[in-house]
Amino acid sequence: MQKRERNKFLVYIPFLFVLALLFFQYSNGFPQGDDFTFFIKGGSLPKIFAFYRYYYAVAGSRMANLFAQLLLLDGLRIWKIATPLAICGISLLLFYYIRGYIVPKGPETKERLHADFLLAAVCAVFPGLMPVSHNLYGDVFLWMDGSCNYLYPFFLMLIGFLPIYSILRNRTFPKPYRFVSPVCFCAAAFLHEQMALLIFGMCIAAVPYLIRSKQMTPYIWSLCALSILTTAFTLTCPGGYSRLHSSARPANSLGIRGVFLNNLPSYFSSIFNDCLFWVVLMGLCALYMIHKTGDGKGLLFEFFSFYLTAGVILFAMATMLKLPCVQYIDRIDSKWRLLAEIIAVIYWISFLAVCLTAMIRTANMRREYRYAVVLFAGMWSSQAIPAIVGSWGRPMLPLVLLDFLLAASLFQGLHLRYGKSAQLSVAAVGMCSMLIAAGVTMRNYRVYLDIDRQINDVHSGKSNMVVIDNRKFDLQFMYSSAFSVVYAKDIREYYSLPKNTVLIIK
Image (cartoon, rainbow, N blue to C red):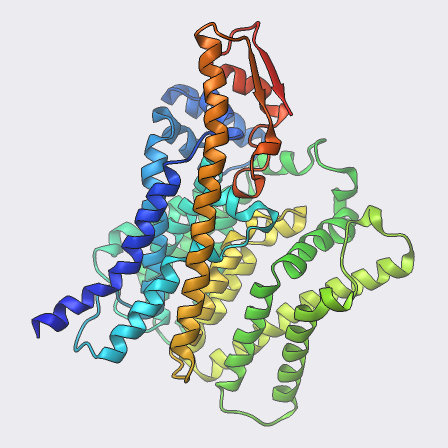
């Protein structure tokens, strides 16, 4: 019996192993891009809050940059410790969202232990499954400001939304979180506007189900009210609209015409062309759900099956078959190509609408799948602003992570012959990706150390020149504009370079 009790804690091994790897990787972190700017603009609490008031007026309501400035009061030391812990926290919360427990309760069979261990391995290596394309991985995981904008808010969101999610899954909600969740709920929404809309979208989707099942409580109503308030705060921020109409934005991206003919095509192109795996996974989740209804007859069932299967095949083969691919509007040569690309965008959006409809239909017939509709609503409400402004890359993180959570939750109960092999394969791919990322991060750090050596030579009087060659970095595994000419002035001030120092950025 004691041996079985000890075996329960084997589930932590993947998390601890990945945590050790992350501590090693983050020990090779260095300041990049806006980190220089926020360090200079901060330095003390009065200056930090003064800068936030300026940011609120001209750029947006997000407080993530304020949070980054608070961390920078001690350089990158706190960030290098806190971020691996936050990532590991996300992994554990993903496991909890899927299983409903962290430490297994009740009798522990060998089969259950294996299943928990494999799922823990998959959740632990989730960073290795995140897209490297469009610098999502580099911006979110390896850039201090990027992690403050996306990783920390997502971590807080998972804690904050746990009460509602637990009720949707008919689980007992841990009492200690009853007081912590509202704080994290609001903190996540205030840190980033995408998280505010994500939470709002999930609350809107969850409320009808909870009212219908008579599971709405005053506590849940209060969380929904908080979501409305934080969303109102986000959408009424003058800085967001000022930034939207900034002169720095391309002229063809402004106005309604720019949204439909440039921004939406650009956004969906990046989703459906460079993140095909995650789009196909959404379709597979919807297909799985409609087949779980037990209703295998009728035109509606046949339509869902055909449309979703056709979409999965189309997206998987589109690049190989050279099917119409959305590009920037200024690259379109003829009205016929424009028409073809608009049709492609319409089909892509309709595919997502059919996915949602299929999930709603299944959830109405089998209430244990209510959470799938809520997660789907959350992942796409988080993408409302990026889609409208034509932004991609790191804004896709909430979409990809909730897609991961949805798929893992749906498929974890399958008792297929190759179920364990599939989980083990995903974990192996994720771990391999994380090891590669750690190695590349270490090589980038060596390049940074050469820059740091040049700066020390300047301060010691041995030299009056600093050369930063971006070509030596692997920019896919860091903020791609980390040492851009745009930051030349801030870099000088950050490193206290004398005025006569020649700074060359290649």
